[in-house]
Amino acid sequence: MERFVIMKNTDGMFRFSYKDKQDRTIFCSGSYTRKTMCIKGIYSVKCNSQDSMKFNRKKSPNGNMFYFNIKSSNGKVIAISELFEEKEIRDFHITSIKSGVLNAAIEDFYS
Image 1: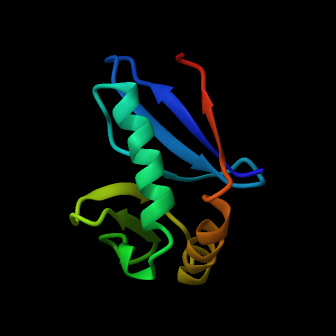
Image 2: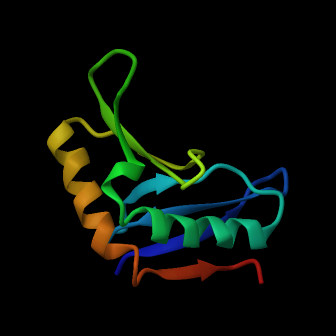
């Protein structure tokens, strides 16, 4: 099952990742100073990922890999994907995220 995983960095900052049904990390957030802000970031992804215009499809600088980011309604990047070898794989994950994130559980080991 798809899920968000909240992690705590060695510097005490929080971030989240999104894992698909095969337990692959598909995208990660930036760092947050507070866990509550990290959780708000997850809900922002759930909301904004329903709008195709919030996905920015990108190529790596060398042009060999593909990725995407998700932007919030204020235009800030809230998540950046892993690198994919083919743009079709990247686009497949974008499509699957739209349905998967809405019911994705949140794993929080830092309560």
